[in-house]
Length: 225
Image (cartoon, rainbow, N blue to C red; front, side, top):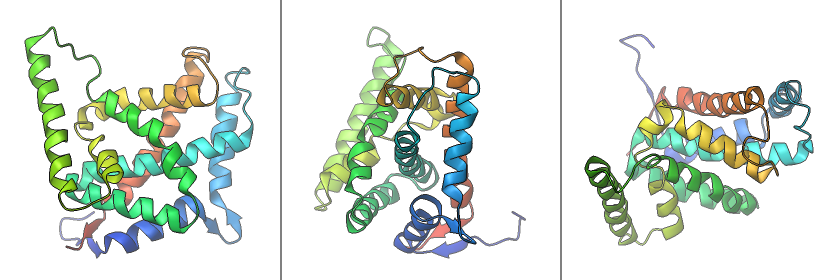
């Protein structure tokens, strides 16, 4: 984007609805469902390096769709901060309910929890510096939860958004992509390290690609108050 370019100002609900429709739920271009191409290409990429990755395509597609919604929300938080992240979480839950896709909201909980764990991964209460960091994470989440809960917002929506706090560094260090990859493998019935390293790396690449696609779209917009 050039230095004189102006970001498009958009309404949160309109933008998210349009993005979900065009990229996740009904991404049809000239009669071709482009999501099918993405899912098929991703699945074949992993199958070609690990014959043990024998997964029913419909289950693979279902899991990737969960990741798409969770990674969009993560990119949204990284771009716009906690207040708009909670608003986006509330809208997404309502949107999925309206479209009779409550399953996506409910089933994505595992991935949300994986992100929450990643922000404190490797931290030990035995180390003074880590104790300070952990106390800050837990207190910030608790204080913000109380703040948003007082506004009569859905507590589950608030919790989902706040679980993604403190995740910027974990994303940059590839901790989150790896946590999500192992969660995906577990949900597909594979034990940790049951797949070879190349297959794991390709799954992680798919996860990063989903995040990057969402982040690039968000970089070009400004949310109206």
